[in-house]
Image (tube, rainbow, N blue to C red; front, side, top):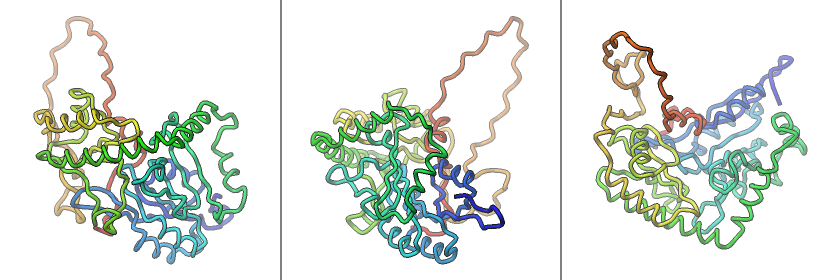
Length: 368
């Protein structure tokens, strides 16, 4: 519910900075105030890792006490990094606060051996899954799962949904959700998913052997070594040695027909699924082995560190490209100019809308 009316303090929601913009919009419309949860930042790999559940969350719950209305985690992230949902669940239950997990990129978790367990089985109270991202549902199709142990009063969630949902839902989307569930209930889908995990691991090994290609490896050796747990179907490649990841993404599309799931300034993230084949892996490795470097070295991509650089002018961003040299004015037109054809929209121009987050590292208060 909203807050601040009649002099009452606004409820607070513990939320990480890499949350989807829809969660931030919900704070605005409900009148709730954010309490920022730190995420761990890997400076060596220039990547946001999991939420700092062990250090940041306990202090926030203790400091704000009964003002906290809910805790939100993003697990897994777009890069496939999972947070410690079980530890967060224990802390939230002790504080009497519901735990919400944005599992948009984890609808497939638990569907086959080798995949991490989903958040609902780890103690989350409410879990949101974008079934169209990793399952076969149509775009916009999603699911909201509510645990039987959810501390919210009965009927609160349906009432809240009525404020934002249409009273005439799309039965095409609903049918696609059922089709996606039936697809993964089949034994062939579980077998194909297990094969996709093996293909993703093969891609990591082959890509890591290429000169200048750095494949993301979770710190601490992954979940098996007591470190950060990741989704094995996400392959993240560090590409800033070759220039901008957006430029490399365009080159992979135009020259090889290879599309990555998420192009960023420093990384390319590839998503594997039950539809991935051996030919897809071979094409990816072949394309990565022949990068068109003459089109990629436009400007260097600086690294982000835990401390700001000295004597940095506040008028220039650390990642700003060099100021372009002004071009001379064209000669006056002697004939009626022809209208210019609109250029196709580049993928990096669509990235912010697709990702939904600012794609900036968190405040580096808890390094790895």
